[in-house]
Image (tube, rainbow, N blue to C red):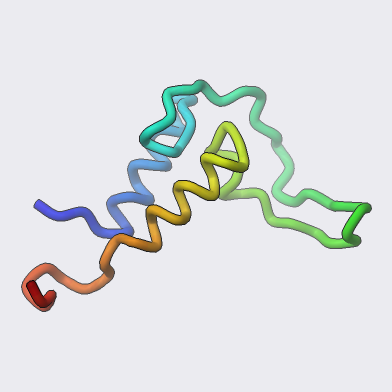
Length: 82
């Protein structure tokens, strides 16, 4: 069986539901999860959507997870070249 980006997203969601960092290689528990959906940066004068970021214990794990997710092929297995 091969993993797809949707499977990986489900893994991240399931890990965050049980209060573990969404990055599969990290075993840290999530701290206090913010209830807000956006974070306002007065430094850059921007509003950031933090919905996905709440599933991770750190910015490092969030970036590592996104990097890993981009490497998962989106095409079906039977269409891929060897």
